[in-house]
Image (cartoon, rainbow, N blue to C red; front, side, top):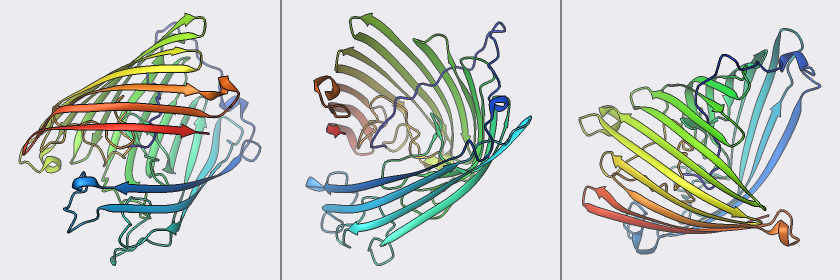
Length: 381
């Protein structure tokens, strides 16, 4: 689950023969140094969780924690070189991550901001670094090494102090206007509060897919992934934005995953499958947005419907995947109502507020039928 879900629209692998190819990005290369950039992002994060009535704690209060509190500062450094000039451009990217503990204790640690040592204490600091080499031919880029990935079947998570990173190969091609193709193979995934390259248990993932925009208002997507000894996934998306004039808009976003889990992953002695989909509608007028969404899961194992993790913890592009829960239980149905306001229209540029309420029900669990609810309030500046 993610603290923040970006509505990134993926589109289907389709292209008409009449489409014109784009101008070559490589022919316009500025050079290795001239096109370089260095960014250092500072993130200060405080997280407080109060497990009332043992809710979602995993262990009874007398054996576990009823309260968790962590505070830290993270430094996320990214260097991106330009590409050398010529037919095939070459470049290098690098990532450096450092997390520093500001406050927590052995009895309060465990929110996932810091690694936990054997004595139950959070580490004072932790770091992780990696680099990738990249090649560009025309509008096609091949990148190998440590990197961030944001695709619906493989998406590194950024929900804690430091983000996940993945190590492998990613090919991105945009040779035809409106069409983007992606293919990749990754063999290591570093968790948000870990320093090892393979701390999330990923052995190997292969995926392929693409994005296509039929117009400025309509787009679709199709992706496929195969995680070795775990599962296969198919993902589809349709997004339509309708301009209503007079500062009004109406947008629809449909997402669907079909997952086929192997018995080694489910540990049930048999293969299982799950289908989960969501549909969201957003009406905007001036500075206000009103959203309603419905999500439904069918199938799964041991109370789990849609599963992810070995394929990175951001791989859940669904309307009701929100701040804490993804509402992805076995056979779960859920709905959401949401309100957003952009305060720049009232003389406070950069300030926005959001509130949403979600309810999930009909969850199949080993002990019976379950339900869940979540209410979020968010302010950004």
